[in-house]
Length: 66
Image 1 (spheres, one colour):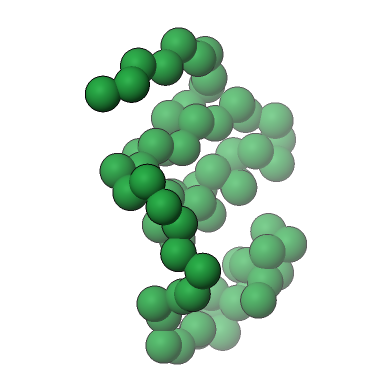
Image 2: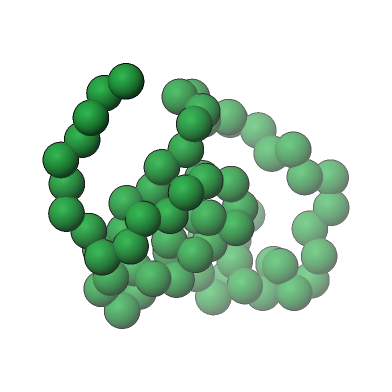
């Protein structure tokens, strides 16, 4: 296991939709965030079949809407 030496304000565990949304939200006011995920690779496609209206609104607020 590789050990990292990095200082941050918050560690977010999990780079799924919830973890990434939290990280984006924290970065807006300047919080230093480290995101950890057990998966090495990212996926190029979404596993979501439906995007709810409120979810889309939140993604637009974060400027990451599809």
